[in-house]
Structures are given as C-alpha cells and as structure tokens.
Image (cartoon, rainbow, N blue to C red; front, side):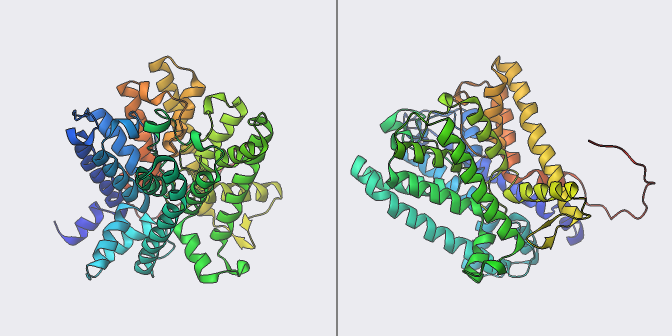
Length: 444
C-alpha cells in the first residue's frame, strides 16, 4: 500500500477511533481475567466490555460495583483506562514518542490536532507537554487535598482512595471505590457536606472539564482577560453560568429541607458533576422532576473542547445562543465578545445539537420498550451515556444485554465525538463546484 493510499484510508479521524477501540478491547480482556475480580472468578465478556468502555470513555456507568466486585488489580486496570481515556490515546502515544527522544511525525501531529481540538498544527508538541505537566500537577494536588479526610476515615487504605478519586474526578470519569465502606453504588453520598471531599472533587471536575486549550490561554495571558481568545472567554462564561444557575435552582427546589451548609454543597455539587463527572452526593431518585430534567440538560452539554469531558461542549451552546441572538436582532452574522462566528461553525453546532438530542431519545425509546421501564428513567441513563457522565437512577446494572450494547455505543459515540465518527465513515470529497438553485422555505 503506497503512502497516499495509506493516508487516505487511515485519516486522523479513523486513527482516533481505532485507538479507542484497541484500548477498550485490551482493557476488556484484562478485566475478564480471574485475578481482576475480587472473588477470583472469570468476568463475562459483556460486563468486562461495558466496564472497559465506560472507563476509557470516562463515563462512570457501571454494571458491577467498582469497590466490591473488582480486585486491587482490576481497580488499577480501570484507573489506567480512565487516565488513558481522559488524556487521550493519541496524546499519550505522542508523549511517549517525545519522552523517548524520537521525532513526532507529521501524521502524528495531524492526529494530535484533531484529538485535542487544537486550532492549528503549529505548537502541537509543546501543547502535548503542557497537557501532561498540568495533568500531573492537578491530579497530585487533588490527592494531597483528599488524603486528610480519606485517611482519617479509612486509615492507610485512604491513600489509594485519594489517588483513585483524584484521577477519576480530573478525568471526569465518575468511577468511585466507596462501595465497600458506604454501600454498593453509593458514590460520594457519605461525604455530601464534608468540604474536604466535596470541594476538591468539584474543583478537579471543573479544571478537567474546562479544557487544556483554555488553561494554556490562561497560562500565557494570565490576568489580562481582554486578551483571551474568543473560545476561552466563551468557555469560562458558559461554564460559570451552567454552574451558578442550576445551583440556585437545586438550592431552592430540591434541597430546601436540608441544613444550610449541606444544602449549599449539595446544590453546587449536583450542578458541577453532570458536566461530565458522574459522582453524586445526593439521592437522584429523590430529586424533583424538574431537578432531574436540569441534570439531563447539563449532561448533554458536557464540558469543553480539548478537555477530559464529553457532551456537546460548552462552545456549541455558546455558538447556538449567539446565533439565536443574531436572528432575533436581524444580524447577518452571530458574534461573541466582539468577534464574528463563521457560518461553518454555526452549521457544525446545529448538527451536533441534532445528534445529541435525537440519539439519546431514540435509544431511550428502544430501552424502554425492551425493558418495560418508564421513558424518563431510560432517558436519564441514555443522556448519561452519550454525555459520558455516569450518573444513574440505579437501573443500568439490571438492564439486559441489548440495552447494555446500546449504552456502550452511546458511551463510545460521546467520547470519540459524533463528528469524528461521521467524518471517519464518509470518505473525504472535494468541495462542491456547482450550486443548486435557491428556493425559499419558511421556518418558525
């Protein structure tokens, strides 16, 4: 196969997909082994595949309680899969290449650019180094902040718990190992009002979800906010709004019966975790219908481009909102922070919105019909899967094989990205030379 045919066949989009699939399958094989489970038994391919996919796609939906079912080796495999999925297979491969002193090829640079959603290929190697340095510093800081509380509660085993939850939170994975201490699938409900756990976990989720491109912008321009890129400004503002507004709603409608301090931390954490971490400190089944609806919307939005989070991304919402404002004010082009947004970007955002609204609804319809469950409960799980969140109303473990396959596909779609899958499936074609005649169609 000549070089031209190789590059045409294995586009950067297809390399990303193959990389994720390869790690998932390898993780599945390891988790199936007897010494990966606490009881020493073989794990079924279905459960191993579901867990490996959830870990690599940094989702957090589980069919087996992580703390009680998996052995220390199994938990370590899950944590490694989370780290690989959070930072990106391509980024880790490139970092190994850089660390070994070898030169990063042009094809690797192109794949890296697509993997971390960078604007240009220039400086991509420097950005890769920055990603790993920031990740190491933030995760280590998270471990140090979590250690006092975990060690005071669980002794020396608190060290492993601090490491596991720090990596899981920064990578927006939502896996926890609390089941052996506070009950299966309990997540962080035992620490709902303990600032030593809630605050570090929340900060790790936010830092991981904002994205490395934004943090690189912050590191370069520091306190000169006006010099930030339009994307960084949109991410920071949108993230702040998506934390503050839901927090206020939860505070006044869902947790009004709790004491003030617990009420405040419950509200903030439940606004942070759907984007897209998957931990919870409250009983989600006890929340109001409006509260769960807000969580579903937050799960679909997700984090930001070039981050450890999934979902539509905050920039997609910002672009769609700016376009709506432009339509209402009869402007020719949408704009944000004094900059015009390209029509191509608006089209991409619209396509993403359609995909992230239609797929979880269709998947929920199938699961509801197959499992004889309510549509609301199924929609919560499918939104959690495609948003790579991991929050659950407690039905995932009891679902059948067909429903598990649907959730696996949604998790993979949500982590790899809808556009990546579409671009990989469709061969690249030259741009249109001719144009069709225009005819008006009324909308609205």
